[in-house]
Amino acid sequence: MAPRQPRKHPKEHATHSRGFESKKERKKAEEMVKSDLSKLRDKLAEYSDPNLVKYTPSADTVKLAKDVAKLDAPKCPRKQSKCLVNQYTPQSDDYIGWESAGLQGGAALHAKLQDHTARVVTTQFNLKEYFDKEYQLPKLDIPADTAAFQSVTFLGQEDTIHLVDSNGLHYASIIKKPDSAEFDTMYNEFRKLQADLPKSAGAPVEALCGNFFTFHLMLSGQDTAHMDHPYFNQAFVKNYRKMIKFLWNKHIKALWEYCNTKFFKCFPQHAAHYMHIGASKHYHPHGAFLWAPCFPSLAINQEGKVYSLPHRDWRDYLQGLAGVFSFGDYTELNISFAEAKVSLDFPPGALCFFPSHMLHHFNSPILEGETRGSMTMFMSTNVPKWVGYDGKASDASEEVKQGYREHCLCAWQLFQPLSQ
Image 1 (cartoon, rainbow, N blue to C red):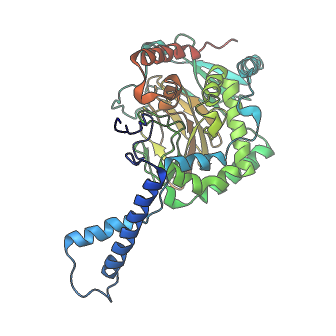
Image 2: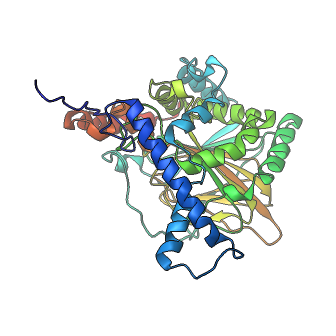
Image 3: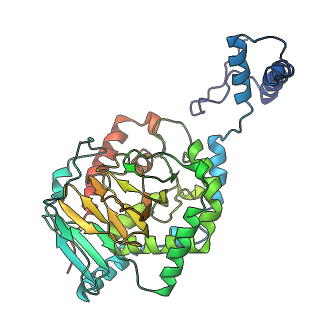
């Protein structure tokens, strides 16, 4: 009789135990380990109680005691994050039901240009210089000097400014805060709610300066792991737990609807593309796009003395756009794009969409006694990549990879000229 061959698990995650003949055998081994750890903890407990210590433990014993203590720390396995995110799955078919979003957005954009509530500004940027790029651009050392930059401010009753490059391709829009009591209520409540977010969830951001905390809620498409669902790291799960009430607040939901609607109206092609990715079998069943239907990730820079240095968000989708919502108590602020040599008025409550990976962007420092914060909506470059690799990032064939490279090059066609 031939020896029994062990079962193969080609797609099993690396942290899963292998070599057990049955679940019963594996469970028995785990129980033995738990028992041994329990006995070890009892022996090491005295080293944490100065009243029980009878001698000085060795360095190796102290290290062992610390390592064992870590085993009691709460774990956030990757599968758990799927369950947590399901709590925020949008309860509406709007997540996948805006098939005509491109046409609707295009019509709204054309109407605003016709009634002069929106304006088009031509800049020195040449977007076509990047059309042969696939995934990532290099980091460069760019000075925060706006001396020779074109200055753009809102005029009259304008509520939107669209930027086009030297070829007429639309690449950025900035929307002024609406003058309405309804928006003022939402805006003021948002400021209060973000101020109440727990400080313990903060994370440093390299390109930002000042006194503030940042909360990341970031979805990452798989790059190497064998998994059948989106990946949210432990920091994401921690921040998500802290912010779930924040995300469910009616004023935050109103802001969610406002930001997505404006994205569809300004960039219908990009919005429809993002919606298509979020509606894929890889993301939609898990409710993975938190700022659905368009954006999977958020970063909230709490209100304080926040300003940014010139930087590219090189982990953002290269052919995509990020949204920035500004808030705070300040009189004047400019957001500047280095490659376009343009500085735009960015008042409190303004919303801006622009290619965050492509353009080095920064803003002016906050004056003494003033405050500013921002909420950034974005998509990691690995999110569309995972869809392009059909969820098999770690073992995708060279043919599949080449197909996705070509897809990225085609995605540059999302940038379209404005019809006036």
